[in-house]
Image 1 (cartoon, rainbow, N blue to C red):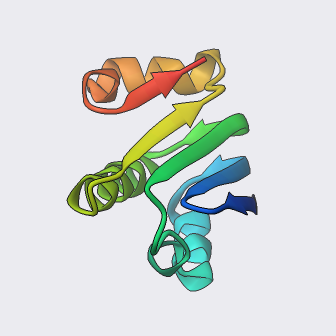
Image 2: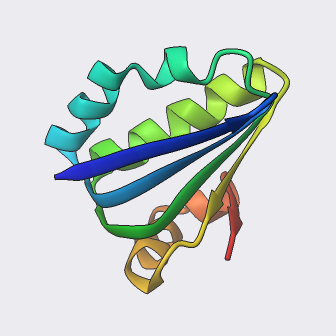
Length: 102
């Protein structure tokens, strides 16, 4: 299960993810319409400090969101990744692609 909360201040948005970012929760985010939510946003922060698991589908979502932000001349930061999430990002090489801040 995934809980999603957002805070928007002008062109900056922070999305707080809590729980598991996997196949079922990724479809929840798609229903929430993440791509629509980030329209007009030039600085996106994904706060994953309460995320306990990321699957390959979740990694794909992070990457496609990152790419969408770059196409819109914006940026995306992943903030607060715990040790388990960081390990997945390291093993898959996503630390080289994504902007990760702790």
